[in-house]
Length: 68
Image (tube, rainbow, N blue to C red):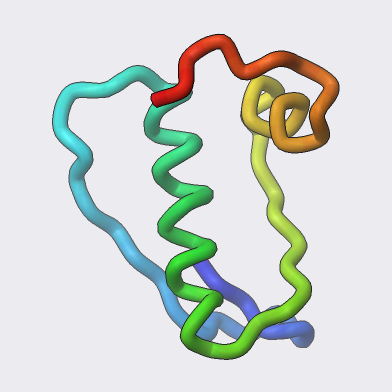
């Protein structure tokens, strides 16, 4: 879900990703969110996630062991 600074929903997307791990699903959600934001000229984006793996890897605290 993409929200504007006031918390109003700007866009949202739901789609299947087939058989995948929860980690793959979390990363896919992040990528799709970035794809929704880009054409709108978003230059700052706050990402909220309950995935410790995704958050720690994006902050550079944990290594990414699988390039996929």
